[in-house]
Image (cartoon, rainbow, N blue to C red; front, side, top):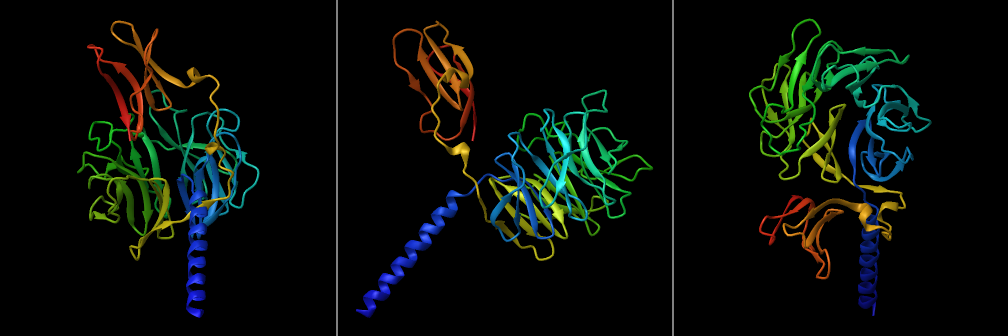
Length: 366
């Protein structure tokens, strides 16, 4: 009898654990642009900023605006968060206390993206406002909203050393076609600029992408796809002594942020934390205290509102429609309505009927 009771208790414990696990899985989100200060991570999910400890757990929402609040960055003292948002329409730089509060608008030019902070407490951001050509420049803004332009062209990301005199920056902005393993003329690469001489290239040995520089203890940590997948690498301040620190395959690392010898970054839909000294790399298990409004079932009253492309067949008897990442073939008069990508993974766009009228061509994104 005791043995039976013991087994029953074990079964109950397993059921409760599985139920808790299932509940936790239902509260998972898609996490982007993580930033780190001390033991706190701030990230973007559902278009808002959230805060959570480095051990994970239930995150706390910091912003609630209908627009997107992205690219958070902690001030050097950890008390303020700068971020990009569109509260008044154009994307501008805003700040809030690290504990949450009323956002303060810091720029008024439109199209500004937060990059980070300078060691002396100025916000570093990227902007097209001061370019006559479509080149991104870096600029700083102080507590009095005074803007100073960094005298560089084609500088999209950057980080200063501890002295604040030397800037390590990414030349070129994000490659427009999003082609993986791109090695063309607009590939992002890293340079050094001390303010007194010409900028010096640091990653000219590799034709692919090197970006997101982060300075720590005399070394530059950055992202590169020189191993086939975007991972964290480091080099000395002269571009030598190259080392690879993470070895993920398939998913590219995105949006890394370094503080006190630790790097937080996005991999897929998750946030991970890498410790430079120990080499430990772990996932930060985060749950959202959210009603997940975007997951609610909705009835589409006018399907044509969601159509992104339309193409006629060569003889005009059928039309190819692309909507919400799926491709349909519909007859102009009587006939069969076909979902040609039903139950196939990925999203599809720009579908077109081939000249023979028997096949369709389209872009596919996994």
